[in-house]
Length: 210
Image 1 (cartoon, rainbow, N blue to C red):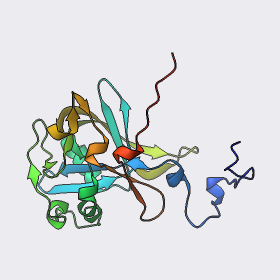
Image 2: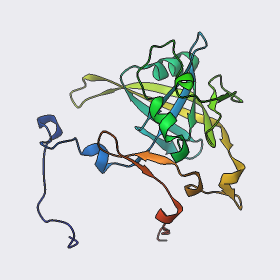
Image 3: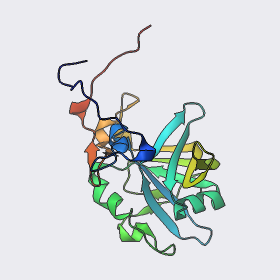
């Protein structure tokens, strides 16, 4: 074991409690990209909410997903319309992203609360965040309620969608390659308020062995 790490370990079983000030698992498995999900309800109300339980699960076709702790407006809208949009949350949009995480009545749009503009999507009814440099239009593949080892249903819902249209600001494309760091995306870390920002200085390269 490298010298900078202690040879002693804090070990616990999650169902017995972690014994720490804050649950460490989210911090261990972070920072995590934020799925800033926009949807439209059947009555036309626009919804926008950030989900840090978010990732990509397949290349071709591109399948991405987010998990919601609780049956929220985003999940309901995605189920009823079969569509959603993922918008990139950047450092410049961090405050607006945070405002959109507030628990609001279903008939109130987070776009208004966060003072964000919308752009019509090309192939889905959900809108794009106009200020975001990247948007992924998605159609729902499945929505699955999660269960425990004892097969007990929990109030958490995984939504998987196939990306059907991609919008990228041309300023983020360098010689035909998407430059992740130029956008300065933000990621959710552990703790109640911790985030990280990706910058060009954090880049290192390592190729797979053959």
